[in-house]
Image (tube, rainbow, N blue to C red; front, side, top):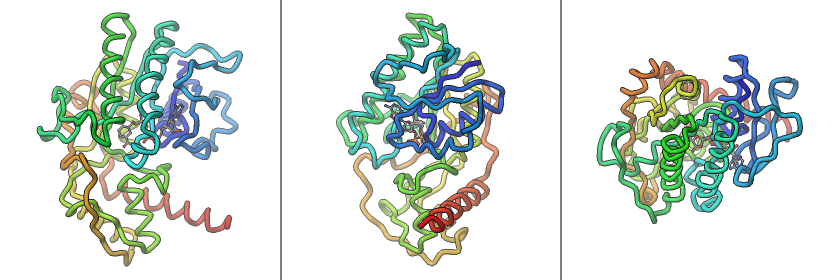
Length: 319
Ligand SMILES: NC(=O)c1ccc[n+]([C@@H]2O[C@H](COP(=O)([O-])OP(=O)(O)OC[C@H]3O[C@@H](n4cnc5c(N)ncnc54)[C@H](O)[C@@H]3O)[C@@H](O)[C@H]2O)c1
């Protein structure tokens, strides 16, 4: 297939590009590099089945002349870190609302399959635990996280309308916290923040008392789930995440141990509307996609620590 991937230079997008190429597909990556890095795709510079097109997908896409029409469109473009919810508030709304509509129209024009990366944040500060797909969520529509949560919810509704009323073949994945190589050190999400602080011997900053929980999925597992859903006949939404729930104090201590760091833990107040607990119910993914995570947190953290160590070495040797 010819697959168009938006957000291709981002963390998950770049791993998905690698996976699609490994399966024999041709990929057109589109990215405006607002939170992504072209370095995530540098290893593909000589790959004839891949092109990176720098563009903002909130505007109608004009692909380079001679590009074959896409048979599948994977819309992953969207800033995803809470540190960007203020800085990039309107761009986040636009990439999940306006760009999703433009790309659905494109999918309709080319009879292409449309894949969307939604998020566990559609469940908000959930009152049901773990979260199954039929839980409708508990989201504050005017809170500081609303630009992300509500624009993803709007996108899901829009996609469902195009599937139901226009016959577009659509797939929706709800991704839970994913981590691994190619995250930005200053991304603000918990794993890169803890790992980079621990490697630098700086304090690990914990929001609240450390009892908040998350369920971390290693990126190769997430991409396997995305790929299975894309190739399936399931419209979703389907949760993809690791049900191995852990509190923040535990994960901070694990990272300190893995990095052999002398860093201390410091506590700051938790941000407004930050979910107390987060854990996917993955029964649907198991039943319909035959998918479940395979990389343990220890293994995934070890690989991630190694990635950031190497990054520090490369940056150190350049300066
Ligand atoms: N990483 C996670 O834990 C997680 C969890 C849930 C959902 N998701 C979703 O997965 C997708 C990828 O997330 P990620 O963690 O890789 O984030 P990321 O920030 O690393 O990647 C997003 C990419 O989209 C690009 N982008 C943003 N706006 C764009 C625009 N208007 N036009 C073109 N490109 C644009 C960015 O430059 C970046 O390369 C997002 O849709 C996100 O909401 C991620």
